[in-house]
Amino acid sequence: MDLLIASGIFAVVITLIIVLASSGHGRRQERTTAELLERATRSEDDPAQALVRRNPRLREEGGTEVLRMLYRLHLLKRLEESMWQAGVYMRVSELLLIMVLCLGAGFGAGQLIWGDNLFSLAAGGGLAAMPLLYIRFKRQRRLKAFALQLPFALDLMKSSLEAGHSLLRGIQVLVKEFTDPLSGEFRTVLEQTRLGMPLPKALDEMLKRVPEDDLRLLVVAVKIQSEVGSSLAQIIGRLSEIVRTRQRLAAQIRSMTAQSRISGMVVGLLPVAVLVAFSAIRPGYAKVLFTDPTGIKLLKAAVIMDAMAFFTIRRILRVRY
Image (cartoon, rainbow, N blue to C red; front, side, top):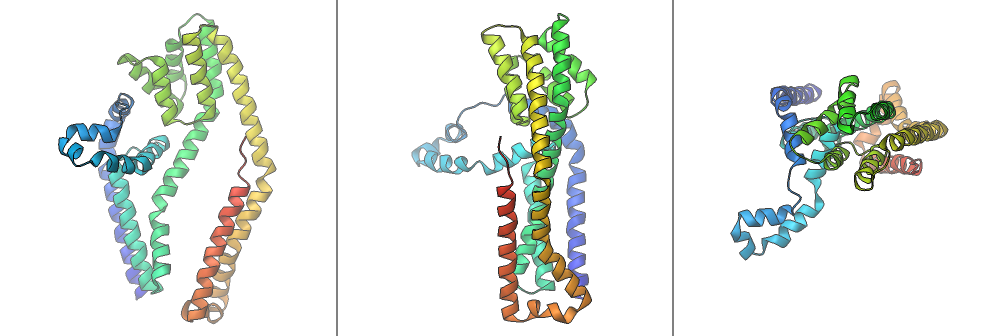
């Protein structure tokens, strides 16, 4: 009976999430370009100072320092930037509402199934983290797709420059010949330049939306060419070779560390698999861990240590180059 109630709560929460996501989909598509342009032309002033200027009482009450302390965290700003980088065009408030609903559903289901506050909080936290994991997955996938398209885009841009076209004309060719995410990002650059933004500034804004090191090399090359003056076609041609070399090196590193990464995943998931197997084969053997106070403490300690080991292995295998 408890399992049925927990399943019902979970189904209701998932239904609310789907309704919220679908209701805002149409509006998000309409305001995507407008919000990108608004973000690009947004003032770079201190947001705390801007808020103080709009509300003179805060200046008298010394609210500037408090606001600066709050803005130093930039948690919501980082979340918003991650959503834009992932191509998830929704408001931060909508995402936070979904996370709160997932947290409540997970905590309620944990109370009905286990009746333990720690397990319930862990279940709620895990369910609330699912939207963040989805955004991270979408972000990594989108950035990877952009990085794979970039060398071919540089080759096409080099050919366009060698044919006598300007850089903006080369970007227009990229928008027509390539698909998203590369075409969408360069289309935004064109729209920003049509509104009067300098091309280096528009490329800087694109770098914020696509924080790729290979793209940063292109932005630096364009800035240097605009200030010093040189053959941009030769620079972009050389840059295309560098990008391909970097991607080849990254693929070699991933192939060399594949066995260690899979071993870490197996070691981290093996205790969970063994517990599930024993619960299915001999329920009485594993039931003690969920009913006996000592077993519950041992299970909590095992979960914490297993999570620490899993993240430690991932940290060790992260190669910076």
